[in-house]
Image (tube, rainbow, N blue to C red; front, top):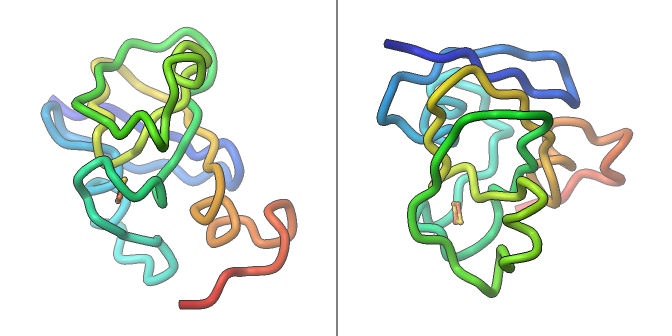
Length: 110
Ligand code: FES
């Protein structure tokens, strides 16, 4: 089974298989501007906010990157975010800058 992930910033949609994390599914799009860091929930480069009522689960994420209060607001690390239904996510931080440089400020380099 695959779920549809919608990126609120761009309207882009892509499939994410059950058990696959959102970052891996995003990378499969082949976009070279998707920032990929540790893929282990530690660096925070892939922060997103899940919008609306959504069903998902997260694996272990660094509390330095996502506090309990953040988590309660739907903030998660895409590399540790596993959808259990279709999701809409808003990119945050570097991911936002890469996906939507106008809204997120000047694109980061490197
Ligand atoms: S890639 Fe490092 S926290 Fe997701």
